[in-house]
Amino acid sequence: MYREQGREHRQSPADDVPVRFSPATCNMPVSAGERVATYEWKDTGKVVQSKRDSITRFPLATSTPLEGSPASMLHSVRESPARLLDSSAISTITVSTVNGNNAEQNHAAQIKRLSEGILVQEERLSQAVAALAHAKKFSTINGTLAELCAHRELLLCRERHASLHRELERVKMLHVIKKKLPDLSGTMQGSYEVSSIIVYLNRNFCIRNLDEGNSYAFVALLKAAEQVYATEAITLMDTRVMRVSSVKFIEHIRFASLPPDMIITLEIYALKVSEARAKGVEDRSCAKLRNKARSLLSPLRKPNVDESVVSSSEFTLCGNVVLNRETVGTQRFYLNNVVYPLEGTIEIRSACSALPPIIETDFQGFLTMYEVVSGFGSWARYWAVLRRAVVHFWKYPDDEAANRPALAYMDLTKCTDRKIKPAAFEVCSRPHAFSVDLLIPTSSSVVEKKRVLLSADTKDQCVAWIDAINETLDILRG
Image 1 (tube, rainbow, N blue to C red):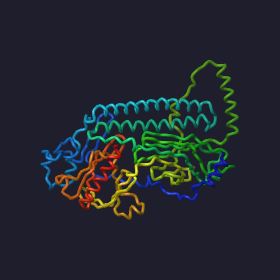
Image 2 (tube, rainbow, N blue to C red):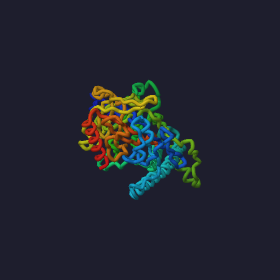
Image 3 (cartoon, rainbow, N blue to C red):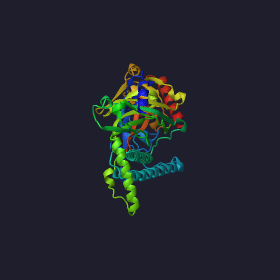
Image 4 (spheres, one colour):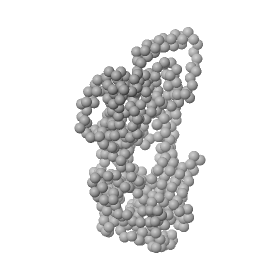
């Protein structure tokens, strides 16, 4: 088996593929726009709202003043855009009844599904802890099959429990915000499949300079939002002879119902195990016979197991990489936060579902964005590219051509506007301007409302940008 792994490594079809940093890791710019309000979910079950300006002169229910309303007529064109941003914050966070009973029913179904999922993982956690305690009690060596399976199950259940809990908090948070995110169309929800993972091992481990008498078991964990999957645990034994230089996971793992800007985190975990296999097998066989005889001759009783000692998995994180639509195919990447015995590179074969052609087609041009720097408002010119429902901002076109990370981005899946329109003169006196309102989750319990105020060079360019964004929003929402 391990000789075959070595041959596969030497004959890998990706040997000529250069190792690079994952673009999903490199291109992580800040969200564009100025913060209008922040909503934080507290343990008491309430949401606390804070604004950039605690004094709101125009507590409007909508995100922008309606044309002809008394509040909009009070605005002066001499006011700065920053002040207009402050006064256009959401005034209340009570549940909206505009969407009727369907929205409430969908929300209740989501809460029920997530809550039931959390209970299932808690039950599986208890079972995994008991199984691990039992394996440790009746085994004299580290790394038995039962122990590895229990460690893997414990790791997987804890990660799933945490992800479901974060998703539950996020759903509760978004539900109480008055202006909600429109639902994403089913045709825009994609899939991502990983069919092969090869992790390369540290040279010192391969030539046995370190850790004589010990080896490792490995598990790959993949996460996307609330979805968490794990490969089977792979154990390397007798590597002094085989000199295995890599570990290959061949499970097919598929994520479904992902947004267009899908992000998948792949983590590699390792657990040190003993290589004293011959003695371990003999001891294990004798122990089984003794335990069998004892169970037959003694009355049935519950083993005295201290489960608190084994309440956490001994698998430790040794490296991770972030995947997205740019990482499909057979590619090699550098791992982040690498720990021995990993070498620091990983080979992944993956694929994802296609997006509608109009979403894949870029729309680009210069846009000027309003920014607040050190308390002062200013306008900065950027090269903007609308790609896959996200507007990326660079300083110059050459920066995009050189694959440099974008300076900021605007994710249209987080847009709360039904339609983008030219900004009224009382909102922005700069010509050819328009704004986009976003809800940006900064954590599972904190959501920021941001407004991106943009201006095109000409009226025709402004109309073209608004049409392109509205067309993207229509496709996203079906």
